[in-house]
Image (cartoon, rainbow, N blue to C red):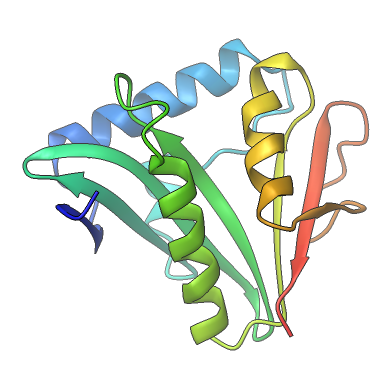
Length: 155
């Protein structure tokens, strides 16, 4: 893990684009129609969103993004570990980085939306281990049947 590096990403590397494509396909395969809120390339390029990727040498291990909802509230977007990199601590490292970045930005709250069925169980466990608790929907979300919402108080 000492050779890992997290970099702010511009979404131009083919491996990052491929990981994002996998992320979106998986979200659609594991969620009912109308319940996928993962950001595509254009969404991740929104000025309110910052994407980071985690690398080991020339290999992308994972990605994660923060979206600023307002001056004190951020949202975690597009967390994904690359195939073949599971169980190495990639998601935990990225989540810790995103939480630290949210604190550096002086957010008082960090929230996220994820699915509620079995394919999302590992994500639930990850977020709960990091101190996130379930909450009501936030921002523009309205899905009450499939989505699960989490928040973490930072201040």
